[in-house]
Each structure stands twice: as C-alpha cells, then as structure tokens.
Amino acid sequence: MPNRYKVLAACIGIILGISCIAASIAHRPGTRLSLSTIEALDEKMESNQAFWIQLTKEGCIYCEALRTVEDQFLSDHDMTLFEYEASSAPTDKERAYFDDRFPPFRYFPALFYVENGEVIDAMQLSDPTEFESEMTSWLSERGTAHEARNR
Image 1 (cartoon, rainbow, N blue to C red):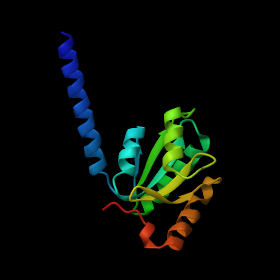
Image 2: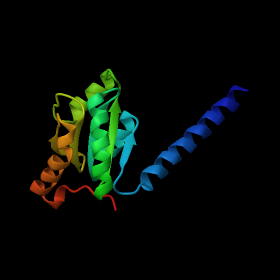
Image 3: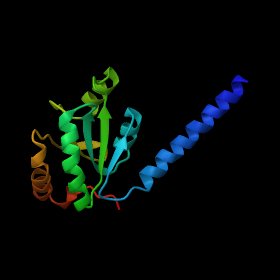
C-alpha cells in the first residue's frame, strides 16, 4: 500500500513539474511570471538569459501598489517581468540566497536586470506612481541591450 502512495506522489510531482515548464515556455510577452520557489529563482538565474526579476514580499503594501502600475506598463510594452515573492518574514534560506546573488537592497520591492546569471543593474522605487517614468528613463539611458524581451 505505501508504495502506491509513493508512486502516486511521484506522478503528481512529475505532472506539476511539466505544467510549470509548459507555463514558462508558453507565456506571452508583456506579462508577469511568478517564480514560486528559491529553486525556480535559481534555475532562472542560471539560465544565461537576459531578464528582469522583481523581488517582493508577501503582504507588502508597496509591492501590491507597484504591481498595479507595472501591470499597465507591461501590457503596453513588449517585456516580461519575473517575480519572486519572499515570505512575509524572509526565511534564512531566502536571506542567504538574496545576499549571495543580489546586490544589497534596503527594502521590497527590488527590481533587478540579470544577464548571463549576473545582476547588471538594479532599481528600487519608493513611489509606485513613478514606475513608468523611471522604467522608461532607465531603459532609454541603458539602451536596447537592457530590454529583456522574450520572443
């Protein structure tokens, strides 16, 4: 009997894994994609792709306010923003990963541009209403090399 449960659990795990992979492959530009685990975040960081990643925190009112503004920006621009939402009280594992892979940041949300597994640039906003002008300025100052488009 216990072996049946192990097989069933393994099958469910495989199906969920395939679903996550399919969802990440089939996304459309101009969207936000969630990375739900540190392992998924690490896999994306190791993908040798250029992309934007936003670190947010569960229950963060500034993160929620910024999401609303970003969603409008994303729908008007051909870019994809990946997001990792940390626990409301980030775990030791999350803190260690952030310290290891990202430059120091003072608060959530924090937005980073990653290229070939390395953080190339960072932006932190204290006022969500400034996002569109800041992102537009950031993109134009850094040229098209920083435009993380997933085609």
